[in-house]
Length: 174
Image 1 (cartoon, one colour):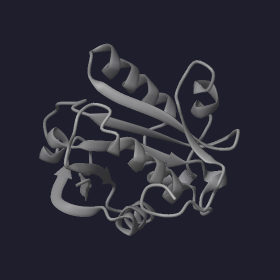
Image 2: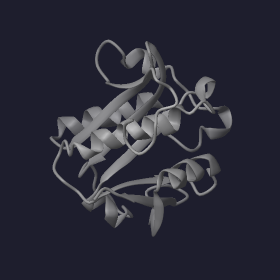
Image 3: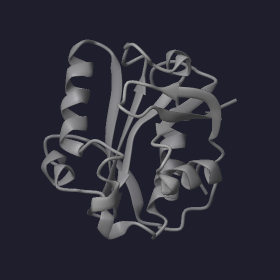
């Protein structure tokens, strides 16, 4: 067992994005109906590169089932500063990007990957924090359900860097 739940997919693992896997991760896509909810992995990796180049913390992962890339995740910590940013982002790790490719959705990979990402966050790779936060489009019922089932709860903030403000949810780490 890892994280909070027993893993459904025993072959699931995280692999840091590197020069051997980034092209395969760029090819992963959510379903057409979800494309307004999350930036492409290509945009995410470019953004992470810029953040890392400026000396701030962000870590990108490929989510794998054995040798097959099934998703992508990006964890930040004190990585951004912008007008309308949720205050909790200044005091938490945050799940900046998270996606499972449309071909692998509905198979438990999202929940399993959150377990592995929680283990990573709990290693406090950039210093200790009390919470882990994320945001999601208010119309994205799949994300709302997944995060709520994992223990993330809305904290009343909105991330208004987007055209439509996203709901912010937090998970206590301690």
